[in-house]
Length: 155
Image (cartoon, rainbow, N blue to C red; front, side):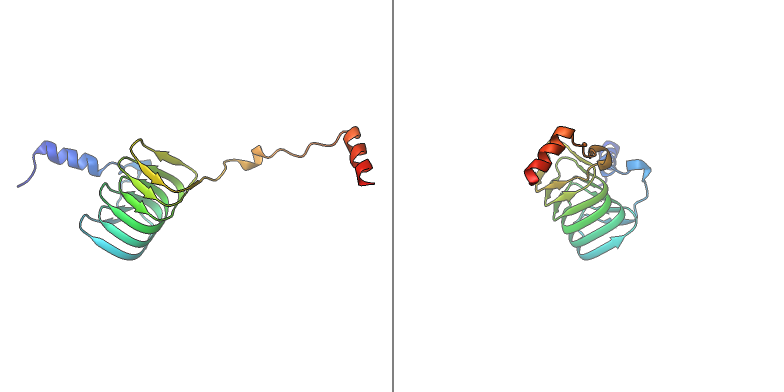
């Protein structure tokens, strides 16, 4: 029996939790509920996982992990948005968003990380420093007294 219009609208809203991130609306690869994929998935577009995946996943685009999805893989993507469970190291070129009730067990490497209350995270985070050249000060020239003191200690 089909659900009511309200139930279907609520499900659609839940399914589209991230379908318009940065204007991306095209879904290129979909691993649905009940589907188990084991292997390497390499793709340039947007990938959504609602089922189970094990292995390696690489995309220059976005990876959406739906609530109830289980991924045990090394993940490398442009952007990662997750409500599911990921076990493995994650690298995102742009950002990682973990939305409740997501769980992530592994390391995260990304320039931007957002995590909602209710997310379970066990691992490490590495974030590239933005504008490092501005943060590194040029060495200060020694005063005449410091230069004389250094020269005296060298003798």
